[in-house]
Image (spheres, rainbow, N blue to C red):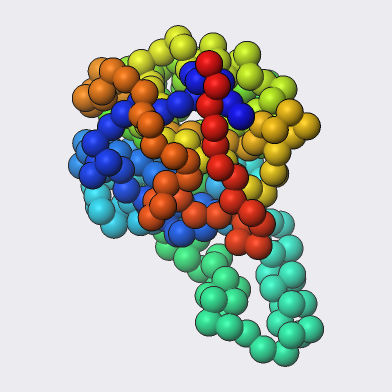
Length: 259
């Protein structure tokens, strides 16, 4: 159960599309933002840029600026070791596994030319040269998508996102430990022009003791840039054909809202 403030605003269903895989790493957006977006700012990369890859195929002029201090040479060496150990144990590889072993090659090609990966951590206040803030990143940018998955550090940058919401076409953010941070999320939802148009519970974390999903994937659209109906939707979440399980072997989480 979630407070009613989490309930998405009604939008034309034909505008909602999924970008990325039908599993973890895919997100639902409003297709109207695709042609109008100049830059995707990705906060938290790991080894998954499927969303960014598919989006830039639809808009080849869009650049990707990704920030993740954990993705370095040691990250790729450790990943390769794990893949090789898995291969030795199984003594066979599926086409998907073969592709995954060579993921570093794709990384090098994707993050070249206009697309950049910065080995920096997204923070609220900079303390060293391996950190960066939203304020500094978007200073000279406009018409952007911001995608955030930084494992609980999202709460440290909510103020910066609010201050720069006029630059943002669409925000995708994963909220972690939702039950413990309801007040912070409530304040963020209430105090800017970014309005929820889609929500999905990440089933990796399940529910807390109060029945609240521990992790939520939320899509916000800028109401000043795109028309949004001024009333809440009656749709049921997850939405068939748009939402898919993050973890395929775990039960999907159905969302309900209360006043």
